[in-house]
Image (cartoon, rainbow, N blue to C red):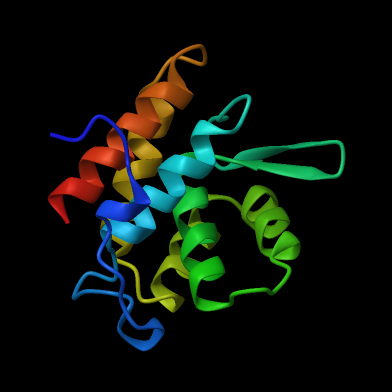
Length: 135
């Protein structure tokens, strides 16, 4: 099993064929794991606003990463803010709109919230890396 998500291990795919049947790819999970590993903290769902910046839970971060892959170069600040403000229902609705499997996103949210605050970031990075390998 991989100890980390190496982008070189991810198979490059065309943008219009980015998602497999469930809408989830190793690229998506690795990208999210890498992004979360750079964060100081990963909050409980749906996330929190710190200053003018949304800090997303891991499930919302998966949705955000999917939107970023589909909308390269677009500012997704409003999406992040809405996920924090409107919560899990909105996160799952956006997942469906992005052709992601909402059951998998919900599983990520539940795993996120089951972790203690001091270990959440590391555990969620590991969990997303495992999902990338299983995809």
